Length: 164
Image 1 (cartoon, rainbow, N blue to C red):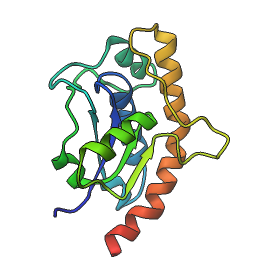
Image 2 (tube, helix red, strand yellow):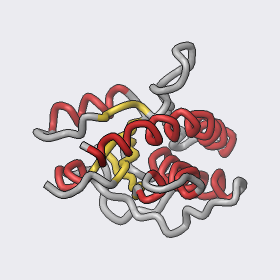
Image 3 (tube, rainbow, N blue to C red):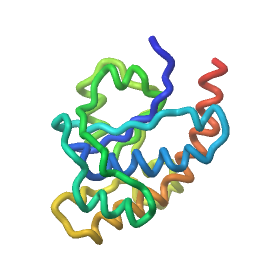
């Protein structure tokens, strides 16, 4: 098996939440030290078509924080992706359950995007699809709030993985 050097961000269709989460986490990782900054972040959907662009409101919500999502192309999560993943961060419990049911080999680290935050935090990120820009911005902000806990987790766990 190849080295697990990827982080996968998962939602349903890979056009709203997971592309935003991918770019936000990649932005956070870029400021980290090695080896954490070497992790690659990708996104996928549990029910995605291949090649769809990110939703217009996802693009807008990220552009207001200086991140570009215009080049995103959706993809379905696959066993090959999971084989390369150090960790998978899902938007909802349903996404995690679908991965657990449909794939034989899953990474040890399979969490919700907000699960590593303090216990009083809401851990699911609702789907903004079809809603107004405010809903997408709330979705983005709930991910931004989770990034520090994800970075702390990766700083602690990824070097341990590389040493094992």
